[in-house]
Image 1 (cartoon, helix red, strand yellow):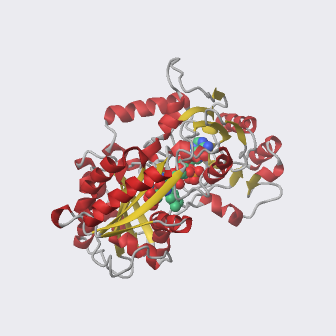
Image 2 (tube, protein in one colour; image 1 turned 135 degrees about the horizontal axis):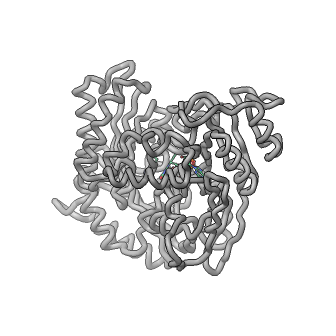
Image 3 (cartoon, helix red, strand yellow; image 1 turned 120 degrees about the vertical axis):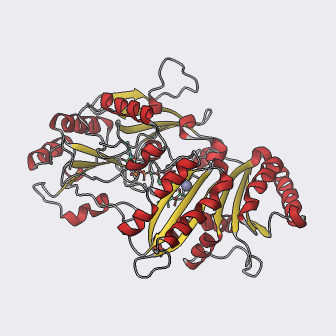
Length: 493
Ligand code: FAD
Ligand code: MLT
Ligand code: ZN
């Protein structure tokens, strides 16, 4: 329970209903009572790992409505959990307090594009716009979103900003700290902070919006986003490469960067277990199985450029060089260049389908870490060995079936996932704080792109020292003295 907060009552619900339209208030306490099963999807996370006990879900349609709700909750000490597409992987978007202590404020009904300037590529959108729908909106204008991730069909731009989501294009277009030009945020006292700038350059004092990028809803509610979108490339290609062992990934990355230069737009890695896993869950093999039987690692690279012939010539030369190499210079076993849009999509599905396949295989213990790329395999092997020593690897029932590595090589971001039959204390205790200490030993980050949420609160100290945590807490208290915004997330109580 959150000591500073009280539970929602039926009179609160009555008040919410006076602010919002009745259909925008789902509550077990409302006069036309909502069955608690109807709230299930808002109370459980994407992985089915975390369960909240919220009794009220609010779906405002405007910034003004958000502001009125927040002001009321602040005055009445009711917690608020902002929720976008609820695809987060660290238990940040569902309540963790006692029953009814937090309302879920779902942004899904705020989904309009506010403006788009086809000269500058600057898009201003409501926070609840689904990422993929923004990509679709931009398509006829010849622009793309600067970020892309496997959850694109559900995640929202406000959620992306609030988690500072990375994803598959960060290598090329950088982080949201660079591409977000402005934000509109409802602060915990109900003030609307209008920083929805569409300026590329604006050095007028502190850049407050940066605080909300990656704040995971602990400082306010993002209601609008202004973002710089890049022009769509005329020519896009992708290639899947099979590597005999992980050690070749780094030299391959160097060679690819040198040869492809500015047209490289993604360089993703997944290990053998991931490849077998996605095939087991329905993806089509991209390469003949006898040709990849010895491959221990796979790399998916993408190019996006302005000139088809030029790009394809570059890519062709690179592939010739890679596939023709001999002896120590031979970094790849085999590879395939997508020949059609369908094949292009199929290659991407091998990589993007990993998360969902893990979910189908079992329960995932997810670690999203930044460590030096040459250490990726060592980290996965170390964790596997640890689980073996603890006697939980291969144990059935209740044991670990897989330890996998995949991720964003260009960003130094490894996804280390442990898949088991169930979530148990035995497995958890074997993994934590072991993995966090390992990451700290590499001087890495315990959360590269998914955030802290409720899952990694105790791990924050492995990546942020005492002074950093103290100043984070001071900022939190300054914005949210009553502790109503996403309580129990990011910072330890
Ligand atoms: P939610 O899950 O609803 O919320 C996430 C956090 O943000 C919560 O703390 C919530 O309180 C807060 N929040 C949400 N909306 C707001 C708002 N408007 N104002 C204030 N706070 C808010 N992440 C990556 O970084 N890279 C990836 O490549 C990636 N791939 C994924 C693939 C799959 C298949 C899945 C399921 C997830 C993936 N994720 C990835 C994680 C997740 O999709 C991202 O974190 C995403 O940005 C979350 O957006 P959302 O709208 O679903 O937010
Ligand atoms: C990814 O890169 O696939 C996402 O971050 C999701 C995950 O870690 O599973
Ligand atoms: Zn990722």
